[in-house]
Image (cartoon, rainbow, N blue to C red; front, side, top):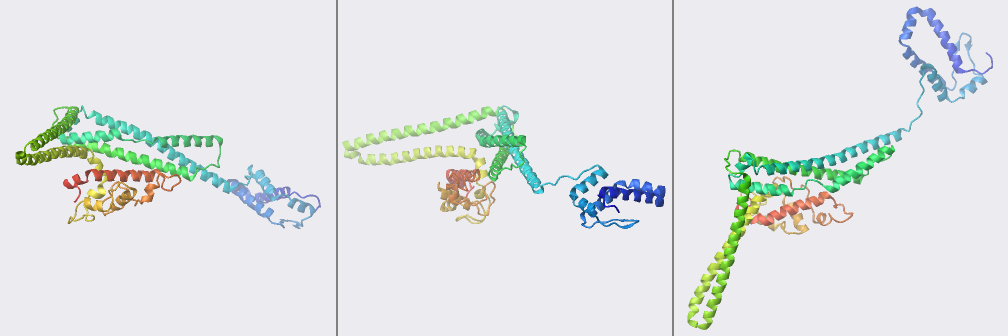
Length: 452
């Protein structure tokens, strides 16, 4: 063999021609057709053989003249970059080229960042969507409540003052509802704008930080809770309409509402006015009797008798005042009945614990709740109320977490772990439940909603 430079590509090209010629002689036309049908398979096998042979340090081939010894030219050829040789051979056979090497870890990081960004974008869009939907739902609920004032269904509510009072209470609560969180809307808008800038810049290294995803989760949960609250009031309005469906209403609900409010205001004003006049009259009578007592001792007995009578009158007037105050409390109780049923489920539900001196099964004892210190308007009192609610009865919407005093005192401290909307929301819930118990506790005992 000559010592000239040996190109492996030329050598294998020659071998390919020899093999093709031998194959055509021995196999005939049928073998040639088979070869064409599996052409891509043959190309793949050939490529595999080339990669294997060029990866071996002492590659060789056989021919009719015997073993080919590697000479200097072949050694020079073998020192060429094997990746280039294989790539060139692949491109020669298939017209394709091997891809450049890739940083797979980098690609994995990019994919993870892209997924995190898309998840974050979805959550931000959810915040905006829920906020808008809540606002629309509140407007629809207010319109539904307002329409009852003049509708046939509303007239049926107006047929019974008990249901009129319930309607007034619902309307007042619905008018005070807040279903949006402006700071959440602003947060979502700002973060979506940031994500759009990141996307426009083609920056694949960005991923949202933990604190912003946590904030988004909190806002989303708060808005979902407001959605649930809206639903509860919507269901309450529908239930009131369904309850009064069988009544006969002769006048619009608006007339019944105005009449009830005017009558209550008038009755209360009249009661207070009478009580003030009578108190003034008694004081004048006492002054006259006192003067008479100074003038003549013989009137002592009459004066003493007058004092007794005056005391009776005063006691009667006190009863009138207390009666008026209790009537007012009854009205406010009826208006807050929905809140009582919602916030005080752990105390008004049936159970055997926290019963005080009461026997058997029933609601919790008001005096037992007081002894726990759960009605004190302090952080410790709220913490005690949180623990007292876990008495074996259903919790309803009552916070399941056991709140400690320091969680309440620190929920507005900058940098504190408990300085989050979650803990501030729990504090507000506990304050609401505590205020209802303090205001209506004795009346609830009278009505059997709480044990003594």
